[in-house]
Amino acid sequence: MKIIKLTTYRVPPRWMLLKIETDEGVVGWGEPVIEGRARTVETAVQEMEPYLIGQDPARINDLWQTMYRAGFYRGGAITMSAIAGIDQALWDIKGKVMGKPVYELLGGLVRDRMKMYSWVGGDRPSDIIEHISKLREGGFDTFKMNATEELGMLDTAAAVDKAVERVAEIRAAFGNSIEFGLDFHGRVAAPMAKVLLRELEPYRPLFVEEPVLAEQAEYYPRLAETTSIPLAAGERMYSRFEFKNVFHAGGLSIVQPDLSHAGGITECMKIASMAEAYDIALAPHCPLGPVALAACLSVDFVSYNAVLQEQSMGIHYNKGGELLDYVLNKEDFRITDGYMKPLTKPGLGVEVDEERVIAASKNAPDWRNPVWRHADGSVAEW
Image 1 (cartoon, rainbow, N blue to C red):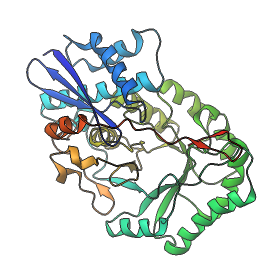
Image 2 (cartoon, rainbow, N blue to C red):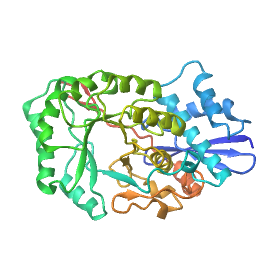
Image 3 (cartoon, helix red, strand yellow):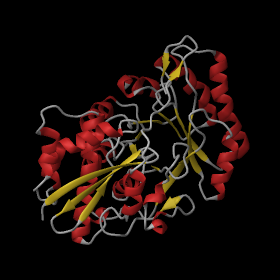
Image 4 (cartoon, rainbow, N blue to C red):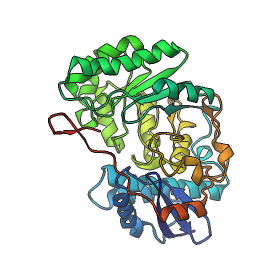
């Protein structure tokens, strides 16, 4: 079997799907994308084609190493996202050829169902109580929300109080009947992170995500020493070599690699295993589409330390497209009592509605996150 063609489809709301075709008619799907940089990743995928066309898709490890090492310059969001989507599609092909789900090829199930969580609120969180109440009716009891709006490197007591009051309202409304993580989203610089963590501690959030930006990872162990709140990070880290240094330094309780950004299934299996050796939980980042979620679940169901899985159904980013819009086997993605069962079809387990994908790709928007500014006019972290 040989790879004969790669085709990318940018689709709403902000995703990109990749189709890899073989000379024997077996097709694999992947999801290579950086939100807001889809066209750039698309070009990177095209630049990978010479390494892939005419090659045996079963040699995933060799193809991965070729894409990673043969170009001399390596790593980073764009290159690793391109590799990630290609890797997912190769695993999809292998599973379909073998007639098995990918998790069976990775050693088989380590659990029977996977705990899922849902986003609530938006970039500027509001109506959180109402949103949580609606999602609880659907069986969710675990959530994540943005903790703050823009925050200065040194901000006011009023700004801190505003963030804390929102969390206090949630605990007052729901008590301990729900769990929620708080995403600092890189909006909180080191001088304010310690303050916010201290003030939030009495409300016992499940975790705080990206307490500071990944490029300030040296603060993870320092912040961890000041708080009992588990710290999570990893969506803006792209290879085991970046994670290696963070794991060694300490500070993280939960690691969140993105299966569409950090080299795909092949790389994230290694990251998950490294995390387990450091007694760090795994909760893959995934505010993306169906193939990305299927890839995450393939890793979750074989990783002992996987504890939570993010998913994008109904989140605030989804304007013009929803995860299940591009899926034929919608029933397999049912979430019951906050859990998903393994996808049982061969490969990644997602049957892509190719006709819908092609139609949606004809008018795909170029999504960009908003540009925020502080009161003094300087650019704020979004």
